[in-house]
Length: 230
Image (tube, rainbow, N blue to C red; front, side, top):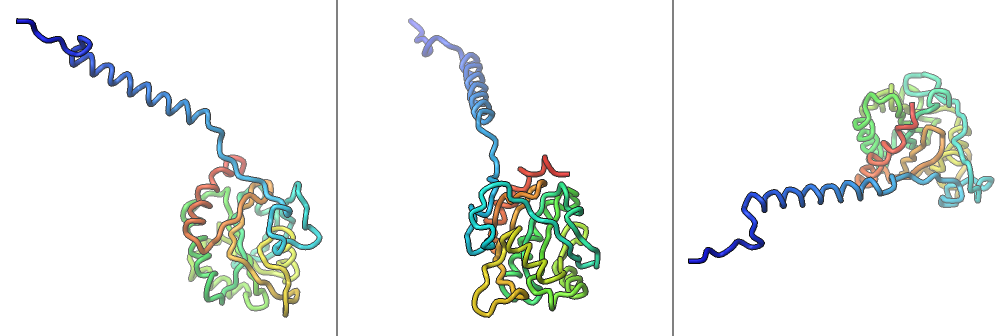
C-alpha cells in the first residue's frame, strides 16, 4: 500500500519552523515600517495662523518667529514670577477667574490631569492667569488653589497689573477675545483654550480645556517637547 505524502513533503516540525520564520519576518517588516515613519512633530504657530479675534491688531499677519514676551506677575503664594522662572520649561497656559461657574471648572479639571500626568517633572509649568485681577487677590488665589488641588511648585495661579495680564493675553498667548461692547482694559473675555508653549517660548498648540478628548491630545503632545526642556 502506498502511503500518501504530506503536502510538500514537510513534517509537522518543519511547518512549525516555517511559521516561526514567517512570524519573525512579519514583525521585522512592521518594525522597519515604523522606523521609516517620520517622527511626529508639532507645528510652530504664529499670529497669522490664529483666529484674528484673538490677536492684537498690531500682530495680525505676523508669520514668523513669535515668542512669548517677558512678564512680571505674582502667584498664589505671593511669589514674584518672571520669564526667568520658566526659561527652558514647557508651559501649559490658560486664563480663568476664581468665581467662574462654568467653563473654568472643566478647565481646572483638565489642568489637574496635566499636573497628575507630569507630577514632579521640573521641565513643566502650568500658568493659569486670572482674567479678573481686581477680585482674584493672592489670598483668593491661594484658597482656590487648595480647593482645586493645585501644586504651587508646578501650577501657578497668577495675578498682577490688569494691563500686564491683558498684554500677555492679546500679544503673547492669544487667549482672550478682542474687545467688544462694554470692554475696557480691565475686562477679559477669556477662552477655554489651554496653550502649549515650548522651551523656547514658541506656541505649539491650542486645546479646548473643557473637552476631555482635547486634553487627551495635549497629554500626548507634551512629551514631544520635553527632550528640549530643562
